[in-house]
Amino acid sequence: MSASLTMSFLPGVLPIKIEGERLLLVDQRKLPAELCYFDATSRDQMVFAIKDMVVRGAPSIGVAAAFGLAFEARRLASAAKHEEQGQLPHAQAFLNEFSLAAEELNQTRPTAVNLVWATRRMAKVVEAAFASGLSCAETASQAYLEAEAILSEHLSANLAISQYGSELVPSGARLITHCNAGGLAACGYGTALGVIRAAHFDRKNISVYVDETRPRNQGAKLTMWELAQDQVPSTLICDSMSGHLMSKGQIDMVITGADRIALNGDSANKIGTYNLAVLAHYHKVPFYIAAPLSTFDSNLVDGKTIPIEERDQGEVLTIYGAPTTVPGAQAFNPGFDVTPAQLISGIITEVGVLRPDYVDSIAEALLQSAKK
Image 1: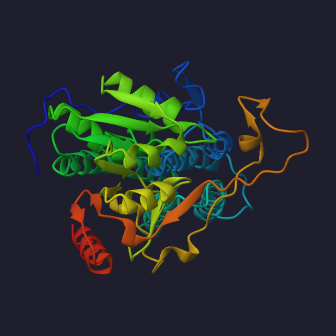
Image 2: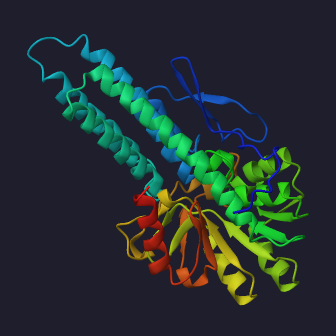
């Protein structure tokens, strides 16, 4: 792995921060016009924040959910002090309510596997704490420590992904990316955008084309904003322009993030990613996915059964609340599509770049991670 990154290569804007007893999220709906924070301290606020995309990006959703459950554990521990006699034992009441909170979070965004990965991990810690005889307060402390560990691991994974990926980027490369996979989405340096940022700080003289990513415009609003912070040369394009650029030989590499990856390498990402992969394959442009191992779903042998979230039609029928089509129009708005493994040149993870046959390389990577 390259060690040539300059000291200026720091994490991007983290989407989460703790201020005293408050859990705050960067309100990604407001960028790039305004950098402000949304109070997600309560369970209901965190559920809303994930569902309404105050926080988005699979890794960041997972980290946010972990801290949301940690704060919920604190609330439940505090409530346990005031329970009346005759109710369920404190531990059982705590577990029941904690499980309900986890399930509410799991229902907010069905495609991003990092969400369920994080909530299950938090549940295991809470269950183990009670099984070992810890009190509600002590269990809540363990939950908070686990959320902090999840965040720390994401930072480390992001950095490793960025460094491994930078080694793949040729000097002077012209890249294209889709949606947003920077620090806001990945809770650290970024995944796909982490690779781009690392290549920039490695002085590779790169430039980036950024798909606007309709209908939510994460590319236009978030990726362009993050690249501007690092002064990475960037050009915004409509999603439909990428084929033209490739046909003119103006793209050297495609790199995106992922929200769920099956054991054969099939990868779900923001709608429009599959289009890029098909175009890249036709034009013989390498197409890479960058994602942490927490994005791999060990229960899926392929991408055929990856759940695809369908979002509100209004996102397609309007822009910033203003109608863009005829009254009464119907719209189809899947949030994600699945790119088949055979279209992917490599998957950049924190343990290295996985190559086909992905069934073997993914299995080996997950086994290697489990041994740590």
